[in-house]
Length: 157
Image (cartoon, rainbow, N blue to C red; front, side):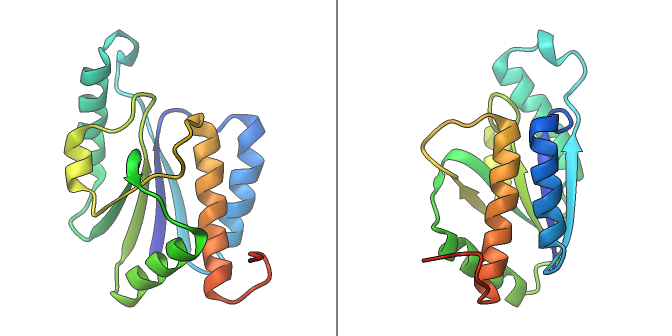
């Protein structure tokens, strides 16, 4: 199984880049892994929040393949413990999911059309985080799930 992290926006800021790279490398010991940064639509600064979400959704939907298992990160989603995330990832691997996609939305979140396409909607926390930090938290939590599945010492409970 391949794990794909998709994020809408710009490249990682330096304060996040090293951490994201480190956890991505670590995940690579367990699964094929790929980060894709989906560029902002043209003239995004001139669009309303609703129009920007719709334009971003159009782009995401062109990237999405029928065999992809889409997990949308959204504040209204279900919260998981680290153990539940590990179980979720294992279940996807067991059911022969080819590409498990975790999608981080743009600055105004995800359009309803994307949330309808998602097979899971996951909330990292009821707190609001900068999108750059969400990338780092996501990478770390997926790595943590991998270590839980392999009974390694990284996760202490």
